[in-house]
Image (cartoon, rainbow, N blue to C red; front, side):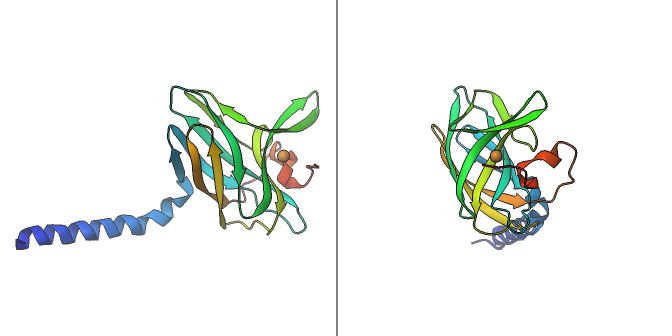
Length: 172
Ligand SMILES: [Cu+2]
């Protein structure tokens, strides 16, 4: 191998190592791709002692030309993961389980506390502590299976967030 080329290779390796070292700082902006779907920033609220369920949030962007459907989700930290929808009905917050969540073509479903959809972690096997991460498996009808990493984050609670399931008022 000519020496000039091998030194180019060495500097490429150094550059790659520098990129890898910089990655932990970017970890919170994490996202995942599965086929035409782009899963953005999965996060969950920390749970308090004795709390038996938690809530996690993801965004699902469908960049394809056909609708896809989230049919199943699971995680090692809970017995079951359910998709729930939350809606104000007059001044009562109503919640129900959604067996399948459709994501239409060219649309983004963004889950957030207090409104719309969330992932209910039913039967927590361990407390969710701020700063920790856990795996979440999503199964879509067309895109298939996606493994994402959920970050437990203690976000400031606004008025809407005060009524989120993770606040403990959510009964099943
Ligand atoms: Cu719920």
